[in-house]
Length: 46
Image (cartoon, rainbow, N blue to C red; front, top):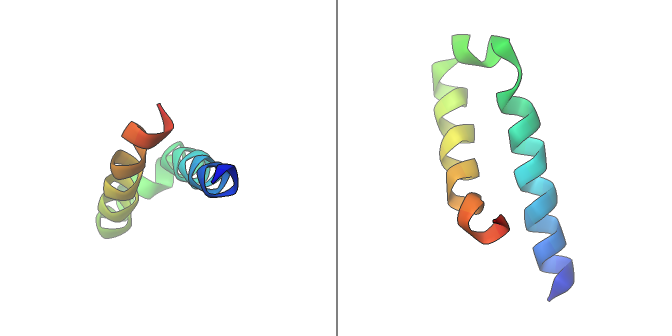
């Protein structure tokens, strides 16, 4: 169970790093996808 949670936290951190990339905002489709996935994981991680 903790392995699954660790994977979720790792993915959340990865998405957070991607969102810090200023060039991401130029790629709206990718930004939307990353933003939505991160938002879905946020409640689990916090």
